[in-house]
Image 1 (cartoon, rainbow, N blue to C red):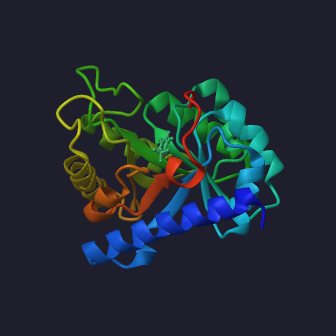
Image 2 (image 1 turned 90 degrees about the horizontal axis):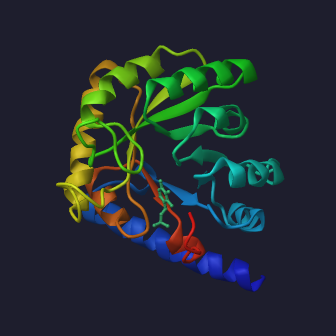
Image 3 (image 1 turned 120 degrees about the horizontal axis):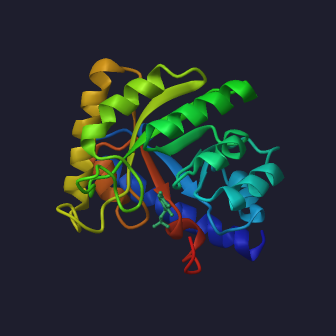
Amino acid sequence: MTDRKAQLAANLEKVEARIAAACVAAGRKREEVTLIVVTKTYPAGDVRILSELGVRHVAENRDQDAAPKAAACSDLPLTWHFVGQLQTNKVRSVVGYADVVQSVDRSRLVTALSKEAVRAGREVGCLIQVALDADESGRGARGGVGPDGIEELADLVANAPGLRLGGLMTVAPLTGPYAGRQRDAFDRLMELATLVRRNHPAANMVSAGMSADLEQAVAAGATHVRVGTAVLGVRPRLG
Ligand SMILES: *Cc1c(COP(=O)(O)O)cnc(C)c1O
């Protein structure tokens, strides 16, 4: 084993132990929580190693980095998640490799994703990104739509050709009433997800929790946690 592989294996083992312990504490089955490793800023070689170590879900947040990485790893049995703020002019590229876009937060993006998914003959899973720190404009500082905008977007995705409504995603807010209250933020996301499922029963994905707060997300009921730093190491400032 290379040093890097040994390091990633050890980190994965620690993260796995954290998720398992959080599931036990919450009385949940381990299979109810999917680990997504966020590989942003790390090279395709690391993605390949993670795949060898059994990782099946990876996430990226910038198309410029993700597109070549996904191409270099197209032989691997991986599900690619896009979790970054997405401009409509990047949608065609993203639809080329992303199985799930977790950062759907406005109607123009839904229209663009649908058009490109149909064009590519692909079905793209979509999560509505919820901004629990949304201001009066209904938008969050790091993307996302405020709770009041969820229903309209969910209906739009559900009716858009080429798209499948997967559920909701959030990033624990750094500002606003939920700052520093991850568990409350994730509980709120779960309530909002329950509301979405009244009209869209199959939309059962709830993506929440990162390296620092995955336990709170599992406790709240998240189905997907997105972990970068705890697996790959501290990133250089950018990303
Ligand atoms: C980078 C990122 C993560 C992973 O964060 P870590 O703290 O490194 O685990 C999760 N979700 C999103 C949307 C991200 O951009």
